[in-house]
Image 1 (cartoon, rainbow, N blue to C red):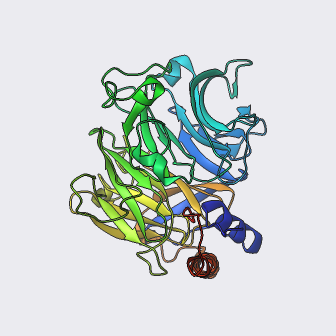
Image 2 (cartoon, one colour):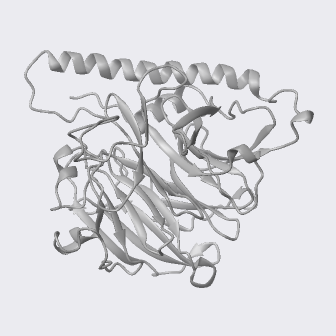
Image 3 (cartoon, helix red, strand yellow):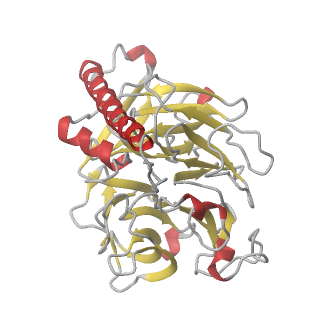
Length: 412
């Protein structure tokens, strides 16, 4: 049986072994922990201040006034095997008036496939029988990896849907299915006539907006400019941040990481796998810092925060020059990042079953991160566990390569 390295395998190792409850942050920054969400996969900030958090097992939890409400917004029956389950959430641009919440999840019935549905809020819960199915995606194989799942509204009012290739690389390079793609859809499920492949693909495949992706676990739009960055989880060598541009082909599986093939759009930024502060093995969160109210120092405005699940860090990328710098580490498997209108940075961590809100305070009043001694020990444990998991996989891969095998999808 193949050894599979995934976000959830690493998360399980960390949760079983240690609980990491704070990050090591730059001087002048503090964080607030909101605990009580199990197996979280994604989050969304509502304009009224509530936070919606997806739990992989099918419950959409609501955080209100820094408290996880006891009753889920909705509890879905999902297939949560492997990397499947409740994976994405978005609120409608007109949420204040229509209360629409969109979810991406793996259905529990046969045939297995992912679905995008819309629900209508009635206070802090979904109105009974309000589910409206927006999109039924292609059927999945028995593989339970690479579902993607991120969904967000673009500045054009369209819903964008990131779909993994279901651990079958050939899916990424065809217009005959929606797997390994970025999709663009009208909120009611219809197909925009200006999609780039509207006249060359057929049926729901006309939803394809970009292709050549492996497992686009998260993506983000920059407020003001509308620029999109797609975070594509790599195989054994590179993690990618791609410039999201209509009609692009990002090259998987023909290429991964930096490249010069004119047929493909190379990543804007990529980082390798390893155990140094600038490496990792699974890019799982990203957010532009362009809030309505600025809280961080002005040097962070316009920058892009991104996270790696394996080594538990957050870094910050300057899109103008492609340089990235450290921001935080010692995080227990970060899977999503968001920037609030109040200027806070929020991160979602499986290892702590929590949402954290990061704020900048007067540095002259900060002498030390209060949790630094504990965090340092937790960070070491996290790194060792992630490296151990990666080492097991690499050794298994070497053993497999030493004998004939027809399985070419040994990926996380």
